[in-house]
Image: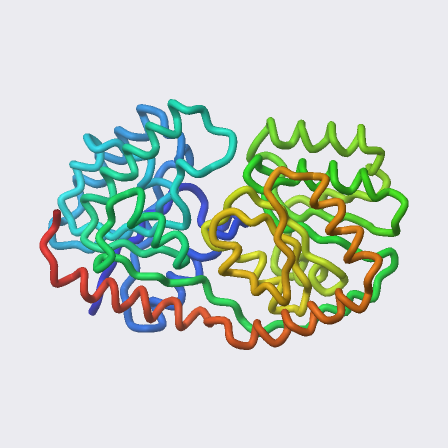
Length: 352
């Protein structure tokens, strides 16, 4: 029996891309014959209290040195070296995106997270990245040896094609309201095209980043677009399916993405995409299906949306390209097989 402990902070059912990735990987690894023990760490990560770090050290110290322990990057990147030393087992790092690349951090916080994540990754016998872009970033800025890196992109399952037959056209954003996602920029951009017909619907948690939420509410009110904007909050799979089905265009001008699962899920439904050019999105979204804008540039975004909303032919062409591209995306069993191979190889190594 192949065994791995998968340490994840907080509630595994949290409706974000990272948690959904972890949950599916657990399911698929078990289907491949792995015994996966889900180990829940403090929900305080990536900003753990001293108490949370002490609890983590106690948990780690109780794990056998012979074990394989895969730690989600939401926790791993914020665990100081002294705490991490309590783990004697073989460590596998799973990095969705480096924590220091979150938008809105202070310089001191960025420096701290750079240091803790670099130290944590140096102790890993293997590192799994969720995109080629993130893998390259880890090699370049966090000194991870390329031969220790495995790229396991999220799976995207086939889905019904979006109808997009609602009027006015629906612009859909899927993602928790945080500064990194760029909802504030989109609100300003939409206020510049109030003369056009559109409706904006936002699916995602509203309580993750108080500053981002307050800024978004301010921009919506000042831009006079409240009547055309709907904050849906976090949705289950059925709720998301309904939103994708009725959407005309997927829009999320993120400052940075480690991969961008919501983007490929939009592509899988034949939705054209407007995305920020930060991080992995230029690899995640093909250029014939998506349009890229400079993160934080509301004027550029407004011009892009005006062009698309006044050009049904371009939207239709990009929708066809998205639908065809999605047929070639990896499935979740492909993702799990790559991780399974990395775990099997890591089991032959000594702990760092």
